Image (cartoon, rainbow, N blue to C red):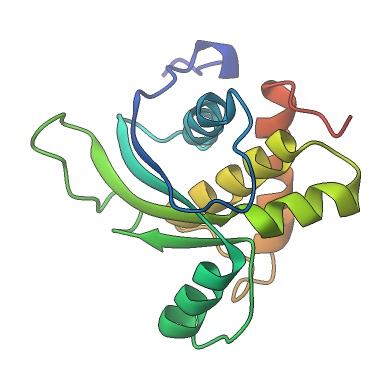
Length: 169
C-alpha cells in the first residue's frame, strides 16, 4: 500500500451555507472564504474522505448565550458551538450534492472580536481558529471528556492555521 503525503491528499469540496445573524461586529472582507478554507483544510489533515456540507451562522453574544443555555445547559456566553449531525463514518449524505452532512457551526462575533483583541491577533485569525476548532468537534474530536483530546485538537488547529498561513500577527 502506498503512503499518501500530506501534499497529495485531496482537499474536500465544502458546501457551506453561511448566515450572518448579528449586527454587533462588521464581518471583514474575505471571512467567508477563510472559514471555508479552514473547514476544508481541517478535513484534509484529518484524512476525511469525501465532500462536506456544513452550516455556519454568525451570531451575537446574547444569541449564543441562549443557544448555550438551551442545548448545553450553560447559562453563559461562549465563542463557538458545534452541532454534529453524525459521527465519523456515520454521516448522512445530502442528496442534492452528494456531500456528507457534518453539522452546524455557530460563532459569536462579539466574543470572537473580544478574544482577537485579548490575544493580539486579527478577527479573521480568531474566526478561522474557531471554525477549525468547531469542525474538529463535528468530526467527533473532544477536549472536554477526553484527557488527550485537548492536546490533539490544539496540534491539529495549529497545523491547519499554519498550513493556511493564518498567523497570530
